[in-house]
Amino acid sequence: MKKEVKDVSMAVIRRLPKYHRLLKELMEKDVTRISSKELSTMIGFTASQIRQDLNCFGGFGQQGYGYDVGELYNEISRILGLTSHYNTIIIGAGNLGQAIANYSNFEKKGFHIMALFEKNPRLVGLQIRDIPVLDVDELGSYCEGKNIEIGVICTNKESAQDVADVLVNLPVKAIWNFAPADIIVPDSIVLENVHLSDSLYIISYLLKNQE
Amino acid sequence: MKKEVKDVSMAVIRRLPKYHRLLKELMEKDVTRISSKELSTMIGFTASQIRQDLNCFGGFGQQGYGYDVGELYNEISRILGLTSHYNTIIIGAGNLGQAIANYSNFEKKGFHIMALFEKNPRLVGLQIRDIPVLDVDELGSYCEGKNIEIGVICTNKESAQDVADVLVNLPVKAIWNFAPADIIVPDSIVLENVHLSDSLYIISYLLKNQE
DNA sequence: AAATATTTGTTAAAAGAAGCACAAAGTTTT
DNA sequence: AAAACTTTGTGCTTCTTTTAACAAATATTT
Image 1 (cartoon, each protein chain N blue to C red):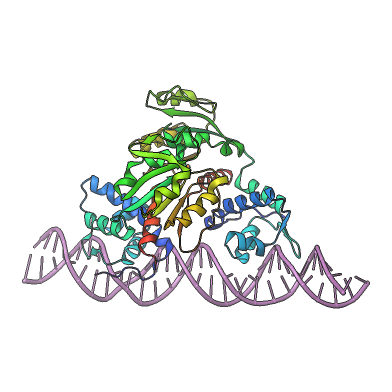
Image 2: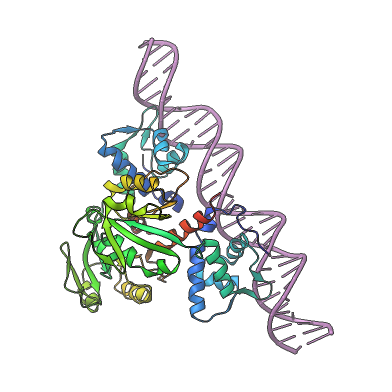
């Protein structure tokens, strides 16, 4: 039973990674079956919401039994596109760029980081794991013919829009932006901002307004 | 005219940092007044939503004129609690911990990073800007009497829950978690998770499901 | 100083998301 | 093999969030 891609709301989609993470943990604990009710207590959503979320993509469960953990994990991996391969580059090889390059889990999920690009000459020439740090001036020539799908912006906010413009023209298909700026890209390009300070400011708000 | 802290929905609160960021930019461009309509085109929310958001906290605008940029920026800073001071520590001095320690803007907004804690002896003893990297075993004794408000978890996922437990017992008032794990803390403690891979997985989903 | 143009704050309506409830379909026990 | 139990998938209801509309207030122009 497959439905897929009716038009699932963003609210649902943004919960998928959490399901994915929890199911992975269950697998590691050799749990093979799970009900929406059990999931509910672990994940903090209602059982009803979990069933409704999963049903956007297909009937993966079985009445009286629940869900097969391994099967559901695979389905969600597939729905999220984690069975595909994405050529990825990182612009900015400071601490944050290096942190992401070092995070080997991304590689395992198909996000292949091919190179970092940096303007600071003291960092150019380094290797992060086996990933080279190249001069940012080589970006265009390096990427030619390589079908780069994802560009990660780890620069300061001043350079972010310029870098985004270059990435758009390569062209990349998606930009993952860590610079604390609201960059502008064409609608055809997938853009995800990770504004770290936003969540810190929310902490500040919540601390100030605790009952 | 002040209302404040009725009960503003999280949806509204999570938009405040974006207003804050945009207003800062306008100030830097010496823009002194702005209407909700102009803000709308820049920020991508409807003018109606902007007016309604701001009105949760007070009537900062004026009919026929709009909003005073500087005044509104100050109000939002105050609402977010960015006029307060927060003693902060970071657990884990790898690339990510260092990246955050190096990001001087947090310091400017009142988040004073007092120390990093690390178990890898090769990192203990370093200084990031003027912030010392201490042995994680000293965490308890170091924090005694220092009124640490925010703990930042930059460890791997295996250590995250243990570190969270230690932080809860210090006690800190809030935890900012960057480890890719769903840690559990008492309800009384403010918890913000930054699961980097979540947004990467969303990129993957959107790339796969583009029309 | 009067007339016209802006633009807010706010109420009402529409759209969207989450929760409830239960028949249907399976599993487990007796 | 029948009875009792479990749990999904789904229609319906409730709650939340967003958008639209407009009177009231101020600014600007004539």
